[in-house]
Image (cartoon, rainbow, N blue to C red; front, side):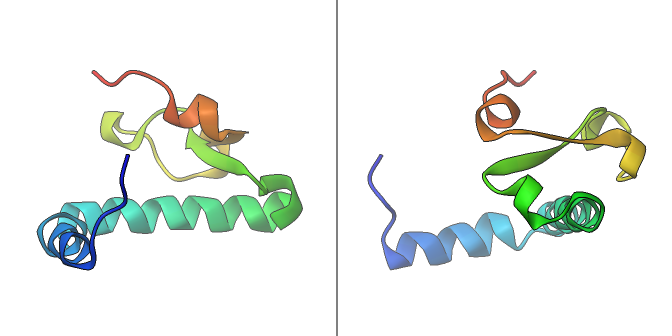
Length: 81
């Protein structure tokens, strides 16, 4: 997949990344990663993703009991609804 041009990146940010719902989701994902880094350390998360066992869109919360460390392939490779 070819990389985007600067103009395409700016358009993507303006139309998608700056939407309030997307910004809130990104903040929750960043919070989850920080929580797991505090508990397990940065080395344990190197090359991994932090996954919500019960997804946020299904009412899951950003709590330690709902988070786990998984490979990027496993976390990003599932089929969406």
